[in-house]
Length: 394
Image (tube, rainbow, N blue to C red; front, side, top):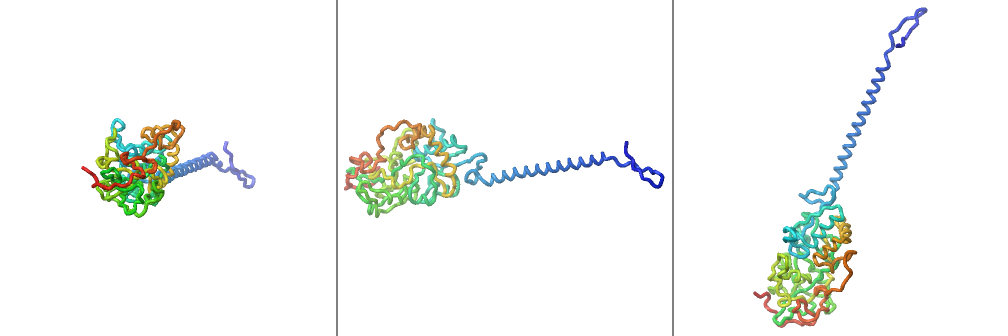
């Protein structure tokens, strides 16, 4: 029963209306509490939603790899675009059936793809021109403008490249010696005496390729123990080995500063290789032209690297740890074996025990060569021709 409030006036008790029930008051209080909780939960939900959005926006502001215009960036893992040309087997070429369906291929490509086995990254390889990576002693427009992250299989040379580029870790040991080619006269002797310091000689550089022209001042003549001096460097307007070789063969240059294995790599009639260079220019090693110097390593800090990138790009922070992991795997050994680089690769536990093998002639310094230039690699004492010839025949 509800209570009744009573007021007393004199001797009479006067009845007052019953007091209001407290139940209605409690219901109002509960509604207010529930409403406050729901409002708090709503505010909290909005806060969490905004926090997640902020984290998403922050992740978008912090890309996983250097950004490239027109390319969807990696969302869960870094996405790297590495480029190469296709005229330098076995480093870089087009995979013909049955090896592949005309995709880019080569030692660099295989190592790059192998990184995905040891790191949570995506690697895309594509074709470009070498001149888009490195041109006439300066960075190529493609690499400088960020069309791709890096270019594969460049030697870490001394000199100009280091002012423009960062080099990744090497994937081959110091396996790219420099050499000097010259024409042979009708007597089989070279136009330039191997004992020469090149004074007064015209030496053509391969534009866009290592060894770079400044490296010729840093290598020694192994026949005399002295450096070369007072020569004139010629740079073709066109990039690539063919342009420089054409100048040598046509008599516009006396010698050519080039990789010591380039004539071998560009030899004609290679099985399962579609030549993208002028094979006629490179036909005649030992009969029309020959190396007077080989095995010169002073032009480089390191051997073949996986990639060059624009200086300060940060690409090596992603690549180098993955390269180091991959180079400890059996797949690295298999890649070296596939491309006949086992003697130049960095050995790991999966390589067979070392066996003595004949050293390639381009790896030897000239003072270790013997005999005439007919092998393609002249000895120090072959002398100089009395007939410089007229350059290329035919």
